[in-house]
Amino acid sequence: MTPSVFKPSLFKFLNDLKENNNRDWFQANKDRYLKDVKEPGLQFIVDFGPHLLKISPHFRCDPRPNGGSLYRVYRDIRFSKDKTPYKTHAGIYFAHQEGKDVCLPGFYLHFQPRNCFVGMGLWHPDNATLKLVRQHIVDHPDRWRAAVSDPVLQQRFKLTGRTLKTHPRDFDPDHELIDVLRMKDFTAMTPLKQSEVTAPGFIEEVAALTRAGSGLVKFLCQAVGKPF
Image 1 (cartoon, one colour):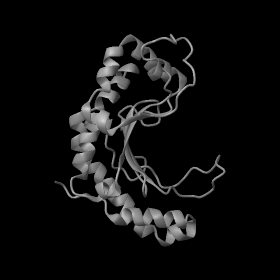
Image 2 (tube, helix red, strand yellow):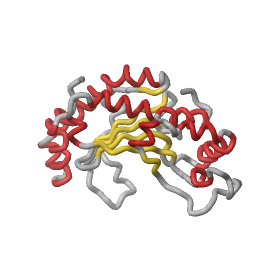
Image 3 (cartoon, helix red, strand yellow):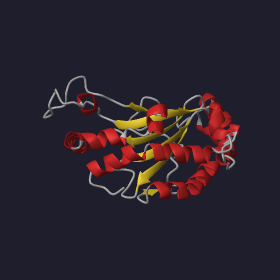
């Protein structure tokens, strides 16, 4: 098993940042951020590249320190009532080759004290994309069932996200998959223990979980006309 690049100091730093979310503290502790969060995050992205390539050649492990798969620590506070400047979690997003800022499926890792998880799918799609996915489910219900039938996906993951209270407009309220058609996010998530993140074999575990959810992501790519 491969040793994990993440150490318990990752969560110690994020805990301390939560208690001291201000510029002076962050500048004084920036070396800790680089050593415990950013550098291991970028290394994980490099190391995960061959694993992701085996699952799909159309998603990117981008190790650039800025603009790559590792989300920046700085919060966008322009339109937020919460003016704390830094995120108290670390996120890694493996985006489709056509870009991470468009409505396309992807794979996500979230690191936060007592709240770590692997996620994948399509989060907060626009209305046009949402309609494409719903129509694809109507046209191919058996493909949808197959996409979410992986045993690991069913055992470990939960389909989660926003849902409509009623049926979506222009879709049959009596459709056999109406509960699925009411979904506004098509995402699957599974929690991780902090001890899993720092244990040997973590990268192999993430690869296995990503593989288990790849059927869902493939279905969503087909729905929006993108290669998987």
